[in-house]
Every structure is written in C-alpha cells, then in structure tokens.
Amino acid sequence: MKTSRYLLFLLPVFLASGCKKLDLAPVDRFSDLTFWKAEENVNNALNNNYSGMYNSAMYFFNEALSDNAVAATEVVASGSFNSSLPKFLNDWSFYYQGIKSCNLFLTYVDENATLPAATIARMKGEVRFIRAFHHFNLMKLYGDIPLVNFDISPEQAQTIGRTPKAEVAKFIIDELADIASFLPKKEETDNGRITKAAALALEARVLLYEGNRMAEVATICEDLMNNQSQYGAYSLNPGYIALFNDLAVNKNNPEAILSLQYVPEDRTWSEYFDFAPRSAGARTSAMAPTQELVNNYILLNGRNISDAGSGYNENNPYTNRDPRLTATVVYDRYVWTNPDGSTQIIYIRPGSDPNQPGLNEYNPSAQSSPTGYFWHKYYDRTSVANQFKSGLNLHLIRYAEVLLMYAEAKNSLGQMDEAVWNSTIRALRQRAGFTDPAALNYPGNANMTEIIRTERRSELAMEGFRTDDIRRWKIAEVVLNGYAHGARFGDPGVDNGYIRAERRQFDPAKNYLWPIPASEIALNPNLAPQNSGY
Image 1 (cartoon, rainbow, N blue to C red):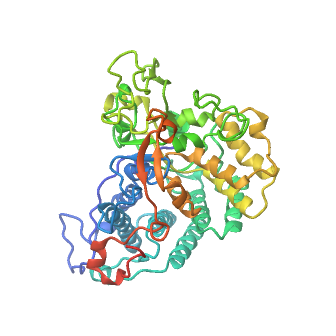
Image 2 (image 1 turned 135 degrees about the vertical axis):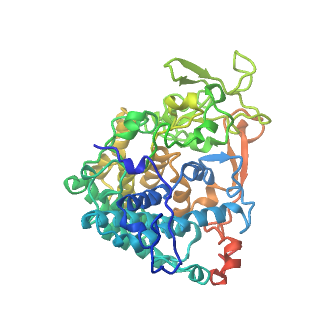
Image 3 (image 1 turned 90 degrees about the vertical axis):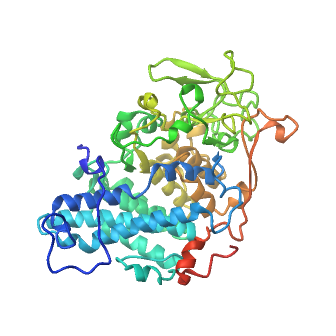
C-alpha cells in the first residue's frame, strides 16, 4: 500500500475569511478568488485539517487526567483549578480552530473545477470526519457546546450560544453514518487517510460513550468484523508491542484503522524524551505510570492479583503477569533493550544500582520517576540518538478497540456468551501471549463487566482512553479521590509502603464536566450559564 505524501509534509495554508471578495484578483499571489482553484492549494488545505486533528501532547498527557498516570504539570486531576486554568482555554481553542479550518474547506472547496468530483467528495468526507471528531472531544469535556457546522463570521462567533449535548451527539452520529457511505475502504486509498471503517468505528465510540445505545454499538461492530470486503481487511496484529515500538510494523499492520501520521526526521514527536528511564537517554520523568495501572494487569492464570489463590507475590510482583504489563511499563529490574541490541537492567529500587549514583533509582527529591515506574510503550529505538524524536505513528483507532466495544455492548445487552468471548477477549489475550486455558476459556458467570473493563484498561493503556472511560462509567469519584500511588519504595508504615505520588480530588457534583473557559464567557456572554459548580 502506498504511503500518502499529503500526510508526510504538512504545509501551512493561508485561508482568508470574513472578507468581501474583490472584483479583481491579484496576479502575483493567491486571493479569495483564486486560492481554491489550484489543486495544490486544495490538497494543502486538506493537509492542514489532518495536521490539526490532534497532537502528540494531547494524546499522551490525557493519560495523566486518569488513574493510569501522574504528571508534574497536570493540575486537573488534583482538583486544584478554576475556570481560568489555561488548559481549559487551550483545549477549547484547539478544537474550535480545527472546526473553523474544516468549515472553511467545506465552504470553498467546490470552487475547484479541476479535481474530479469523486475526489472532492472523498475530501469533504474526510474533513467532515475531522469536524465531527473535534465536536466529539469538546462535547465530552464541556457538555453543551456551540455546534458550529458552517463557516461563521467573527461577529457570529461572539454571539453564538451553546447547543444541548444531545443535539451535538446526534449531529456527530449522523455525520459519521452519512460519510461512511462514500469514503473508501483501506485497500482503495493511501495509508493514513480516513476510511469507511474509521467513520463507523468512531460512530460506535460515540454511541458507546452515550451509554444507552448499546444495540447500535453492537450492530456497527458486527458489521466491521464481518463485512471486511466492504470496509477493509482488519484484524489483530500478531504481536502487541510491535504495534507501538517497531517502526515497520507500526506503519504497516492489519490493526490500525486510523493513526496520527509521523515520518522519521521529517515530522516527529518527542514526548518520550521525558518518559524513558534516564539511563536509556531520557531527560527527566514528565509523566509516570501508577501502581493502580500496574495492579490492573492480571496474572497468566487469568486471576486478578487480589483474587484468592491467584499466586500473586507482593515481594516479586512482576512475574507471571499479563505480557502487556512488560510491553507497557518499565519496573524495577526491567531488562531494557538498547538501540544496538544490547541490554541493561533498570534499577529503580533505592540503593539497588551497583553503579552509583543510580540514574533511575526512585528519589522523591530528584528527577526520577515520581512513581518508580517508566513507560515502555511507544519506545522507538531508532530515535534515541535524536533525543527521542520519533516517527512512530500514534494510533487513534485500532481493531482491538472495535472488539472491546463489541464485548462491552453485548455484555450490557445481556448477550455475552462463549462465541462473543472467543471473538473478543480470548482473541485479545491470545495475541497478548496468554496460553493458560484458565485465562482463555469463557468464564461463565464471572463478573463480566469488571473483566471487560480490566481488559480494556490493559489493552489501551497510554492511548488516551482511560480518562473518558472512568467518566462514562461514572467511577471517577472512586478512582480519582485519594492518592495515586507508585511502587513499594515508600514508608512501610504508610499505605503498606506504596509511594504516595499525588493526591487527587474529584467532585462528582461538578468535575464530570470542565468549566467553559472564563475568558470565552467574557467575550461571549451567550456561552453562559457556566457549568455547574464553577
């Protein structure tokens, strides 16, 4: 399959809006009258929308809003914020700038008379997907938001009101269902483009997050799983960690439905510079996995660490665990593979490194990990010499998510059975490396809701799902109140020795929504009233 040039070099596009068209167009530069007539400009405008869909910082640091990770710069999870917090305005502005760019494209692209009609129709479908994606993210965060489905003027932007969340959700779902009919399947387009499967998978995600439309979720997922001739041949990649750490597999695999596209040296992300162990070349620890995430990974016999007879040994906690733990998290005495293929032991327990001072050892007053854990997922060995500037793609939608959505929907409908289990949870565990029948066989009358939620957390860790999951399941007040913990390197008389890494607070009366940025309400009073509690 070809690699798409339009995603490799994301060039700036200068789009004019809110201006009256002149009678005469300049001959030495593009104007409103001529810009869209050039095919190159249309392609660049499409590139602009792709590049503004999401970014690596949002992708990774969203994890620190959940119980999966802590980050030194993240204050939302601590509960210590108000409506003037810059993050709220930054995210709000990011998505609405993206919506503005999408609406400009959709308003003017038909002025091009040289591109084939089918090409323009496909492009418009891609941009409508991106616009729906922006609205979905805004709706999750802020609830009722301005629904902006046409190019508004600056004056309208200062008077527009908020649309009820239900209407926004309907718009998103209707858009995705409509564009899926004329987007291409993956075999008919370039890597990285939005496809039929991407539109349907995002539609299923939106319906899943609505919480009361599980039958529709199940129907869409069944369609994606069973009609590959129509949507594309998607399946689980044979190896889990290769999806994230192996450059060749990361770029070309049967599982990625939609990914943020990066290119080594030309378009890269560099957050991993502050995620890896320091002895591996990292600068500091900007975000670290929690003990709560580590505890989520089951044992190879399928049992939770807290289950009677599980065999879990608190003094040897990382053996006989779900292989996705080792694929995702770096723990004490981890065997780390260097770029040249050699290995090193990552000593994290204080005083354990035979070569002192131990760069990776936990020290609450130093640059070490605040939890005693580092990330391994998305470690790009080819990027180390370049300060971890990586060209790995960041996966937004994977086939694994489709399977997990299907399992959750069927279970909520009371329709989980051995056939559904085998096509979803069993398949994911087999791919991860489980072989024990006790972990693979259908567990019958077990607590299936908790099993699916545990599986989802382990499979999708560090991909930005956990924050949304704990909110839609309405468990945020349980998992985000109290301390986020780290490894057992702390005071043995406090929390059994598990590091108190960060104190969290979550008020269910208000924190399920973010406040509308105070500066936006000041500019546009029609955005009032503010979300409750702020």
